[in-house]
Length: 243
Length: 222
Image (tube, rainbow over all chains, first blue to last red; front, side, top):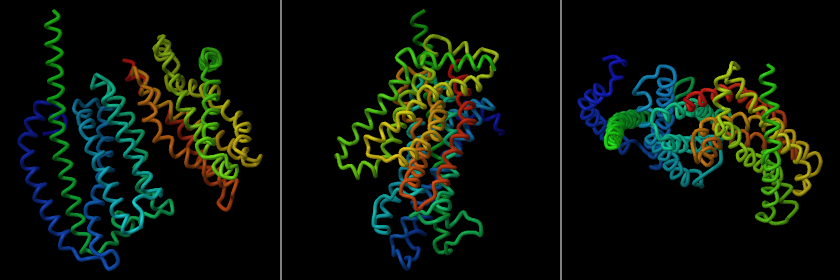
């Protein structure tokens, strides 16, 4: 089953119809394991039990960037290879990525109040993630602004690729600037600095959230394909009535 | 080459004549700067402290407003299709249009800055610092804004969407522009570092902007 086979929407719908229940089951299972591990993880010597917000905040933040990267790959698929489902993938991913970004900002804000004393701080990391959130919203607005989905796809693809410059800025913002947000603890040269007691639940939750994204994304892609079929049928019906 | 020169001349002439972007942009800049003391209060010290930020915000909003006319007018009367079909590469044509737009709308803002600096109680070194950062930063605003303008050209009510698309990309220019101005005025931090980054942003947008705009126009026009 190559990528070119999946380019056929009917085959894609058939495949995802078989795969989706398993994905849902795997997601739920991983969440149960991850949440149990998070609940039983030890308290931090400084932060106490509040450190456990990390198990939700960090995966959401990672996913907010991963989703934009996935959309950028889909954008390349649209512009370079004219893959038929690339723009479906891009359109379906945008609201999900926006939701992850919003949750990352929200949980981070709730974590910041007890830890930093403030709900918000205009440092490089928080500001660049806020800009990412604004770009997600702008992208969603652009998708809905053009009537024809395939023309909207090309405009959105250009905007996605231009906005991809923000991803390395977010990642390295804590290194390049003096920020209140702590520097990288997992994805850094020299390996993670987190103790295993925290690292394992974090990675399990990250995997769970990633599977959640894949599940929601495939389900949203199915909906988008069906939505476009409905639109084509409506247009055919309208032109038949006119004829 | 002559074609590009002709395109630049045409755009500048149109901008200076018909409901020109040039004067309207400066007028809006003036309006924003005049509104600030009403909102913030007439305290001259506070205005001097906020001066660079107010001038930069005014320039940013003004350039955002005039971006609409970069492609819209040509799209409406069909010249954009002709430009896209011509032998000159569309990327160079976009770059030429953006250059003409900056000369007609961005440069007047910079020229107006010393006068507005007086309204904000900025002294000569401060105003010249702001003017220099505007000179380095407004090309970045125009060329990245061109991407948004190209994306929104085929939409009917594209104006507000254009602003939403372009603003996140303009925020770094604003940050470094104000940082450089503040560094030149109050000064423990260096002026050179943010100014260099500002120039880098402009240079990058000079390259990326025309390519991205050309791709958007090609896909939007067919």
